[in-house]
Length: 525
Image 1 (tube, helix red, strand yellow):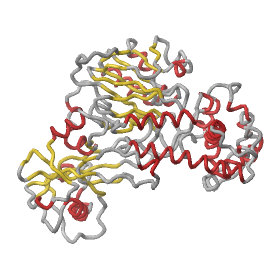
Image 2: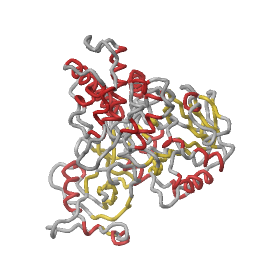
Image 3: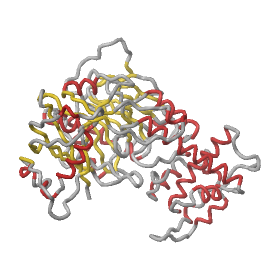
Image 4: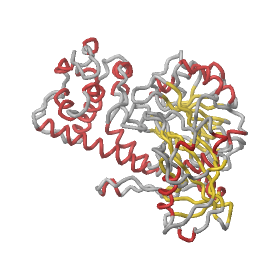
């Protein structure tokens, strides 16, 4: 079941072109200088609060004109608008000020990013609202044009505009643009020009979709500047990895895009490339960009045409807009990210996900030391938004990345403690570190634990008592155990789960395929 937010467009009584923005509350600090020293720039957005269903009769009812015309989408009279507006008033105003009149502005349904339910947003507009000399310091008036300038002419440390402004006041491009998203697929455009279409894919729980990302400027032009581009086009898509059930929809998207199409692949996992063959079939002139380590793992059935190998730092021109490829190994040894320069938004592939953290694929060069380096590289870029391939856009990039670093380091501290307390096998370590985690998640956890052990060994941080490599000989302890929800029989897998699984003699992608087949790939931290 969806949850609902109320977003309020409060017009300036002295200048109708301006509306009220509120400085957004930052995530809580970590309490450690190493992480708290990385600070995201201020984020401004419309006032908003959760919109709850009514419980009984309200003391007073707010009249929102025009709401009845949206009754097929949402029955606003069933929600406690009065309490929601009172919460917003406390946030933006000093003292008791009466509201003016309200009218229904817009209803926006969020795309199915997962893993939780979508958040639907009701926008209402305040008309002739008096008393705004009493604004809180965290509020200010801005026009739509000023917001657009902030969004499109950014510097790494400049203030930012949030997605409610874009979806509620600036997003009119879908009415006029030539390329189309199928009507039954919800999508999000944020920042402007960066369109995310979550599409069902063969990814792992808790996610069910991979974000197809589309850049397709409405008025393509030549780039003004002295830059050598590795590829140019009028549109670009990232990671066409949708399930075969949605290949018809992907075909329609590709067919509506300009023929000068560039395809950017962050890495080779099936939930990121399952639609490549469709792109190739319906636009054989498309140009594919990927790291060499990624391309050698992509089969001819997926892509048999030529490609351009990239290694990081290459520039790409799409309709006059510049994008920059960023080499970001860690998840795999060919993992790439992509920076949209004008909005300073960073597409991070599977380096980050909307909830939890992804498994590092040890059979494809996954490496914890490289993961740490890539994380710091991202923070040095100071992106305005992180765009993962699974889940929602993250609006506090440095905070999220620091959270990943802190979590990984906490795991390593726990691993060292487990070894000091007598752990001798990988099973012993996982059982200690993940003792409070559902045992169904221990197998994918073991992959990252092994990479953490390697990382600790490289830094000479392993306890001296661990004189031999951590092995998996006790993994049979996991076989045929019961959980509260269902029973697992893991015996067919155990032949692979020896020390060798982390080395070159294991068949390509066996480990990751096991995780995906068990729906365990992205479920733990």
